[in-house]
Length: 252
Image (cartoon, rainbow, N blue to C red; front, side):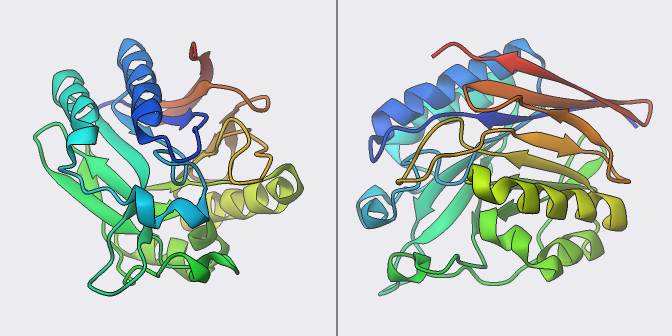
């Protein structure tokens, strides 16, 4: 099986400023390309920040002209990139908290958060339950967004669908980090999944993020973890069935 390098982009979002956040995303994509990353995952709502009252005004389509720089960089670098965004969720419905996956061949996929935190239902609607997987370099991956990971059935569904990697874009505060990270480690240990958590690198939506983005290998070993907040890539590489990690700083 070929080697693979995946990374969580621990980025910092500007509230509601899609143009500024796109620039941040392109800097992270450039840094990831320099680090020879194959698959890059951004935090929950990375393109607008975790700003629930602004979701309706920040809805994005994969084809949106404001995302052209990201699509162009994905095509140029041949990476697979997952960004966090407010996305449409049906006529007459509130937007969904989404993750848009851009593939190097021009394809895209929109995942919609299936489980909402209390209070999110005022501004967002749930996505349809599905256990989709995609393939990259001999691995299969499945996506999750924050509160999805609080439901064991979500990770179990990914494993049953054949995923070997469970990739979660999140917003986790310092007070919630111990419980949430323990839960993700448990999925790695019991379901045989490689689990990546991409957290925000700074405050957003009135919350103080813990940072500490991390990766646990199948079996539950913590391979790599950011030391705290700040703009970094948290990289996990599998070569010859062995995982190793590193943390790379990203200039603002």
